[in-house]
Length: 421
Image 1: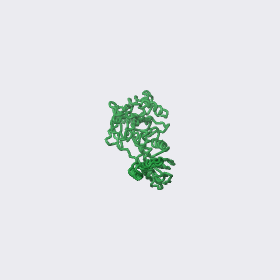
Image 2: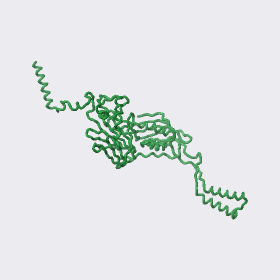
Image 3: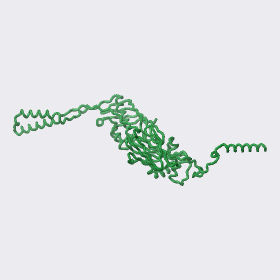
Image 4: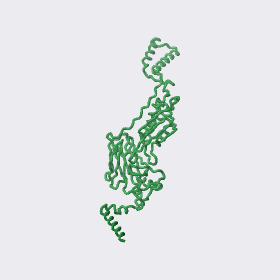
């Protein structure tokens, strides 16, 4: 009995010492936080997440915003009971419910004029700002690990003087939205406040210039026949006049010598006038038989095809792409490249190619151009949700190149293998 009493005294003494030494918040329950949770059994995010991103590139500005899923669910239904996990069906309902509320959240201006933008479908991602993972279709995610991301894309001039972002969507509990601006290899952190919901970024030469199109080797011109059109017309006119006089039985005024002299003088004077060149069939172009020659032509064509997708409007992409591609291949290459450069899932952000390399293994001449058996590798990067994605694609294909209107263009493409490294 005495041993039991002694043990109780020792335990009580240890408790009193811990109570005196440790902070009170470690020994007491945060009753206010527990009561504020609608569903006390659900592991909701204790600290709400509100983070914005502004990605600036030549031809495009992209605005992204991340919020914790609990906050977004409260925006859809303030009285909703928060679940512990988000099933695929719950995610679908959440996206449908919040999409109808996002109109007017984001507006972009360049040079004082509003830029019409495109709002992509909201996406549910897993993780924290700067460290996110996309969800596979049908996957369930704990509520405490889920965020909802919103994206707007705006076509801009290649080098705008300034960009103004207006934000009228949700903010943090401090009535502010922290925003990180990315341009080139640099970034800077700013904030948008509820009482002044806008920020202005000035270029001042900080935005990198768009990559120029590669120079494509020209096609050597063929031989041509230069014709003095004015002299021919003068000669034929004088001949018709002489034959008309002969048929009517008239003599040449002043005799034959003055007429022939005037005829020859007119031919000499009109010789440099209206001279035209007529190409001689079969003498133009060049027969490509060496892999080095084929590679020098094909590499810039492929590189420029990727450069076309630096543009953001469909018409602008087609205009640049048509400089390297012709015929039915134009639309096919547009659709396939758009798909290859778009990130997986429902996020829809497009990768920008930063490095490119092509090699030609063999070449076969055709009637007008050549067909090359080649391989190329395209490396692209894109900033998304605060961190960078890298994609490397490698293709093995047979490409046909032909002269079109005096320029080399790709006219056929058969991909044999496409791999993501």
